[in-house]
Amino acid sequence: MTRIFLTGDTHGSKELWKLNSENFPIGRELTKDDYVIILGDFGLIWNNDKEDLYWRKWLNEKPWTTLFVDGNHENHALLNQYVVENWNNGKIHKIESSIYHLMRGQVFTINSMKFMTMGGAHSIDVMYRMKDVSWWEEELPCYSEYKELLTNLKKHNYTVDYVLTHTCPIDVFPFVDNNHKEMGIKELERFFYALKKRLVFKKWYFGHFHLDKIIDDKHRCMFSDVIEIP
Image 1 (cartoon, helix red, strand yellow):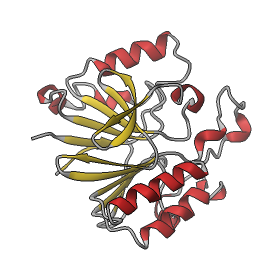
Image 2: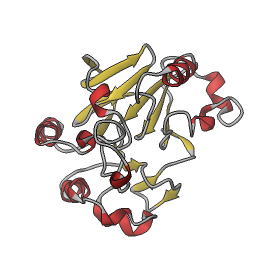
Image 3: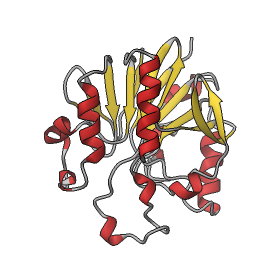
Image 4: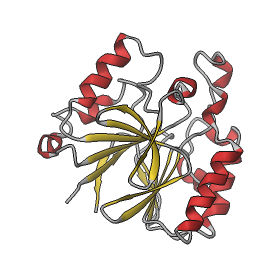
């Protein structure tokens, strides 16, 4: 049976330590049929320099297959240059042989379970970044990505097992906010809140807030923790 693990942002190589053999010893027992899913700000597709390539190779050679939703701190222009492929009933960018980007607006089937994916978030530090160098407008979903998500959810009667995003529904903000992220653009978070009213799901996992916290029986914020889902 395929095993599936979740963790939060990696920010390039900065937080990859949580997936090394010392901190994630169970990783030695996994195979390429098992998955570790990163909940946004993957950050290893930044400029394809030697550091990017070195750490992607390091991660690609791990026993498992790495999946990720995108966050706000990604080079979206570079990420979107990868060829779109179909995988487990959804669309991916295949970054390396064992590293896949789970694209926005998808519903994937793994272990007979359905996973909704919708990356993106607003950068509160945008004023310190340079457009198309360290910040990209594509950090937030466009109309077609929202539409694709709704179309795909309709096919599944708005019922999934797990929701995987980078940011969270706006009603969850008071429980996770640090550094006043709530002052940023709330378009995506409001969309998630409205969607949640009609969506049937078991758990909603997200990153973004650099916090490990179980909000309630439905929502969990992930950062350093690496957990296995059933």
